[in-house]
Image 1: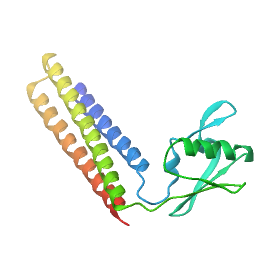
Image 2: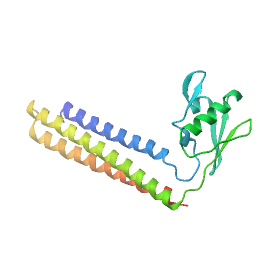
Image 3: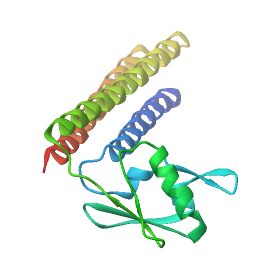
Image 4: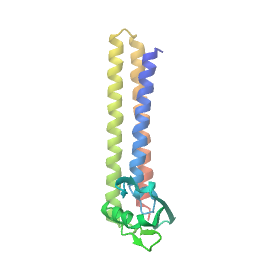
Length: 187
C-alpha cells in the first residue's frame, strides 16, 4: 500500500480515537450520583491573584460514594476554595469545618437522571459528528491522492478501510453511551 494512503488511514484512526477520548472525558463530568473528584475538575480558585485549578491547591478525595472531601494545602485557602466551588454553580454546598471542606453529593432524582442521559446522548452525537467529519476529510484526501496518480484500487481500499474505521469507532461510542446510561440510571 502507498505511504500516503497509509498516512491518511493512520491520521483518521488517530483523530477518531481522540474523539472517543474526548467523549470519555465529557462523560466523567456527568455525575452518576456517585461522588468523584472529577466533579470539581472545572473549578478555578483565586490563588494569590492567579486563577488556578482546584486540584493544584488542594487534595481531593472521596471517602464514600456520597461525599467529596477537599483538603487545601494551605489553611488560608479554605474560604477561597469554598467560594470557588459555590461560584462554579455545580449544585454543591460545601461544609467548612476549619480543616477541610466536605461536600455532600445528593442522590439524583429520576428526572435528573433522565436529563443526564440526554446530556450523555448529546455528547455521543457530538463524538459521532466528529468521527464522520474525520471520515469526510480522509475521503477527500483520498480523492486528492487519486488525482495525483495513486491507483484507483488503492483508493477503493482506502475508502473501505476508512468506512470500517468509522463503523468501529461509532460502535465504540455507542458502547460507551450504553455503559454511561446504565451507570446513570442505576440507583
